[in-house]
Image (tube, rainbow, N blue to C red; front, side, top):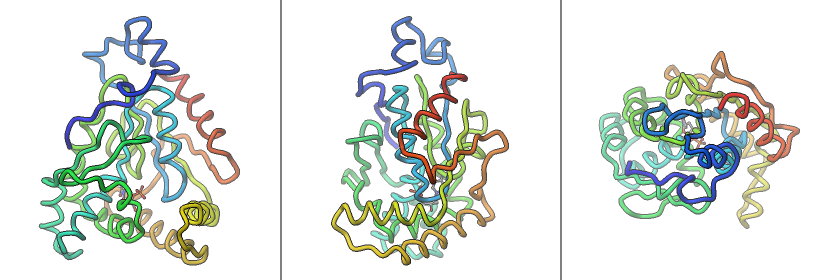
Length: 257
Ligand code: DC
């Protein structure tokens, strides 16, 4: 992955990042060049809202944002484009290691994911791509191939990373770990609303079945299954607005940054 310009570099800094900058320090209070950047991890199942929440928290703190699911999705898309079979592990891992993936600026807001220089952000949201991403994410060597790309995103003034194993595997020493859930029914309804708003056809029963199937794979795979880290704070977003969840996360973060 090419170097990514941080959200902090592209947006006006807010909150602790801005306050820290004013005093010439990184948001951690440590010297920017030498300190290990703080990381906030947000893990949870598909549709729990972790992308929206992580993005908002990153913007608020002036931190970089890592959408780790986009990495799995972009490898899935590249493999579909190259007609690589799902059981051709060697070719899939090779793609994960070598695919020319770039995030323009941060992944938040108006940025794009590029594959071979082409913007593919919209295609990544396609159900077929998500389904393949969830399947290839069960391959241990493919996960290892993507690990280094994720670790490189940890830079000052800090990172908000969302996915399934951010707090358990990729950043076990994270400053704050959130485990975000919502009932499968609520997640299906949210997805239905999103699709209808985009003018696409959608059926709640079908979406619920897809969510249950993907959950089953994400929770039960042998490698890096979706599980809350022991030291994660769980938030059930079923009955909360986006703003309410963001406020909770920022409150928890405020105590630790
Ligand atoms: O968060 P998402 O729906 O964009 O992720 C797509 C798939 O990628 C998901 O079904 C499982 C996989 N994934 C993963 O295994 N580990 C991550 N850290 C992120 C995503």
